[in-house]
Amino acid sequence: MSLPWIIGIGLALFTAGGATAWFAVHHLSSSQKTSENPIEALTPAPISQSPIVEPVSPGPVKTSPTATPAAIPVRETRQVYWLKVTDTGNQLVSQEITVQKALSRERELTAVLQTLLAGPSNPQDMTTIPAGTKLLDLKVDKTGIKINLSREFGTDDGPDMLIGRLAQIIYTTTSNDPNAKVWIQVEGKPLELLGEGHGIEVAQPMTRKFFEENYQL
Image (spheres, rainbow, N blue to C red):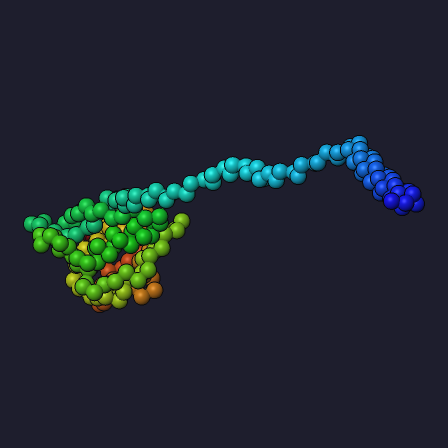
């Protein structure tokens, strides 16, 4: 082999070896630089937290209202007056009745008079008030008790019966207040004469005392 050829091969090998060595050195340097760079700390992602649920105070428990027992009506004792025939003549007799206590005296007295106008339940008692007589109106004020009766009340009859009729109305109306004054009307007009022809005069107002002093059963 000639010398020039040998020299050429040597140069080629030297050149190849140098390139290889450079590449190795350069790769090592790059690796060191990479390893020298600090590793950045990874910030952990925030852990999602469920919102704190506050306990809810329970509302008031609705309860059904307790049923109020119905009030028992209060009853009042009153008197209704009838007539009884005796050996000495007619006599007033009282019968106790009970009526529901009302907020107004008018309502209580109306119930009493309606019982009177309905007639007696005892066959031994009698009434001189004509059948069909109605109470049209009743008012109580500071001047007394004002009652308005239907026209049947003024029907004519014998004097004894007319006096008895007047007595029944006056005494029954004043059963709760014996001193009360009674104003009597028939069809809205003041009663001045009870009955026709042989009727009896009626004073206004009427009281128990006036009746006892001026009339006789």
